[in-house]
Image (tube, rainbow, N blue to C red; front, side):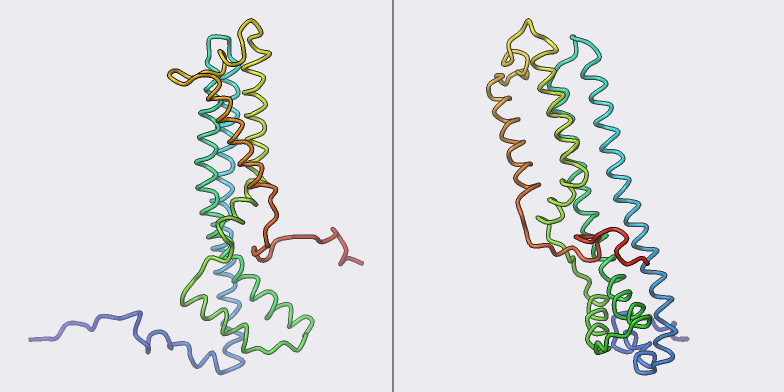
Length: 234
């Protein structure tokens, strides 16, 4: 009987070290890096597009909810609360995608800082350290930014203004939009008293505000932060 073809094991040591020669040969290493850099940048761009898509849908939902909530007095005020729940779901999706994007972007920044930037302006940094760091991350990828920081940054940049917009609209809807009724009567949800709804909305906004403005140690890598625009230009 004829033996079948051998199955390729991508986890085998010889498979993982197939490019070991390029790692010890300077010319082959520098020739390999641009191809990897282009692939990593392309992946980072794809992940960023997915992140922007989540944000776009959140804005569309907010616009639709606002349009429906103020269509007339026969519409219920808690429609805006449903919009807040929907935005919260988009925020959870956004944070997960942001952390994945940050992991890819950090690898791009390692190459930019230690290979391309160093080739333009050598700083004397040892070549081995960042190569080991990048190689280890390619073998066992890890998220670079914590969930807490990702949540805070996405709230600050996108979702907190959407929450404020919905909150102001809800407050206007339960007060000035129907002045003949009391706030608690207008804010009530079927089966839930208005006082409970008002307390829940107030507590929610206190929590979201604290998550947005509470200072934390910055771990996200490669973002524009604390730099004056145009300071490097001549």
